[in-house]
Image (cartoon, rainbow, N blue to C red; front, side, top):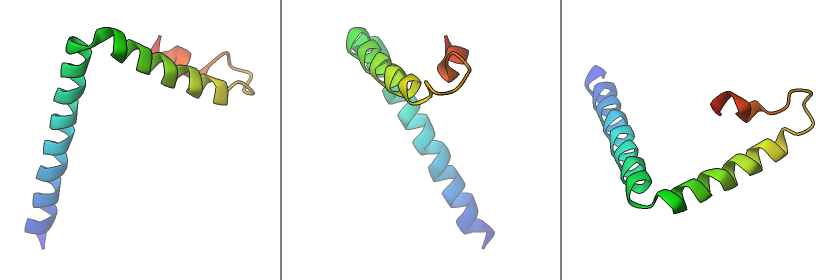
Length: 62
């Protein structure tokens, strides 16, 4: 039983590493496109939190 959980953990760690590499390659290869996509997501997220008294939840990441 422990073997199955260990295998799942290794697959999860591998998937996280592969996605991190893909994000890094996209950031280096297509910086303008990557920044445009990040700006779009950031504006969509901050628009959803506009009713909070805090300026923006996303200001933490700025």
